[in-house]
Image (cartoon, rainbow, N blue to C red; front, side, top):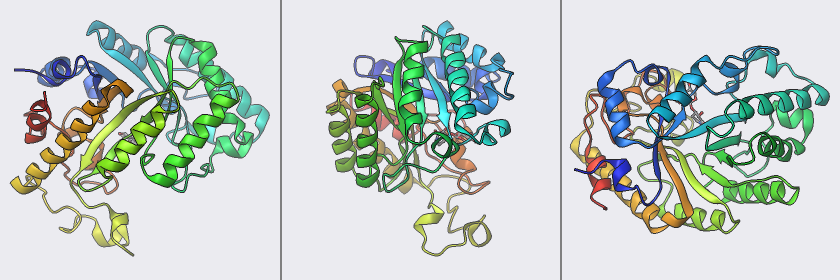
Length: 341
Ligand code: XIL
C-alpha cells in the first residue's frame, strides 16, 4: 500500500514537524512511521531563536544539528523554522530597545543561523506572523525598533547568507480576505525593495468548517500570481471549539475542562471522524488541482498524541487534528487522502 510521501511524490513534499522526542528518536515505532510517511521535516520548536540563540553572544546548535542530520540521513527535505518571529524569543532579545541594537541582532542572528546550514536547509521561514488579522503590521519588538524596513532587511540578509535557499513569508489565517490582502501587499513591497521572496507559507491551522475551500483556492491563485510558490506549512484541523468562537466567553475560567470545550475526551466519535476525513479529502483534492503551484504540505506534528492542540488554546484538552491517532494508527482521514490517488 502507498504511504503519504509515495502517493504525492510527483506533486509536492509531504512533511511533518519534529520536536525533541522525535529528533532524539525516542520511540522506534514513531520513528519508522516518520521515515515511511514523510519526505520533509520542520523543527516544531528547536530552531526558534530562544533555543538556538539563548544569549547575545551564545548560540546553541546541539539540537538543530541533530535535526538537520536526521533529515539528511533519511534523504528528507529540511525546512528551517523560523528566523524572525515575535514569539519564543530569548528574554534578552525582548529587551532590545533601539534600532542600532536591533539591526545588529538581525544581522548577526540571520547570518549566523542561515550560514551555519548553508546548502543543507532547503527553505527558510524568514519572517513569521508579521501581520494582524486586518492585514496591518503587527506591533512587535522588530516593528517598534526598526519600522517596516525590518521585513525587507530580513529577506536580504537571508538571501545573502544562503543564496540558494528558498525564502518564505509564513503566517496563519492568510487565506482570509483581509489578512491575505495584507500579506500580498507585504510580499510585493519586500520584492519591490529588492528582497528575494520565493514563497508564502500558509500555516493551515484550520477547523472542520473553515476556511472554505473557495478562500483557500483564491489564496493559492493570488499568491502564485506574485510569482512565488505556496506551501502549507503547519497543517492540522482542530475538531474542538475555539474559545474565541464562543461570544463573550471567559476562556480559562469558564471553559477549561468543561464538556463544551472538550466534548470528546476519550475518543473521537465516528461522526466527527468521518467529517475530518471528508475535510482532509476536500483540502487535498484542492491541493492536487493546484499541485504545480504548491511546493510542500507539512502536518504540524506526527500524530494526535503529540499535537500542540492538546494544550492550546486551552491546556489539557484532547484533540484529534492529524491523520494518525495517538497509537500511531492511521485514521479515516489518512485513507480518504490516499484514496484521491
Ligand atoms: C508551536 C509549537 O507547536 C508548540 O509546541 C509551542 O509551544 C508553541 O509554538 N505558529 C507557528 C509555530 O509558527 O511555530 C507554532 O508552534 C504554532 C503556531
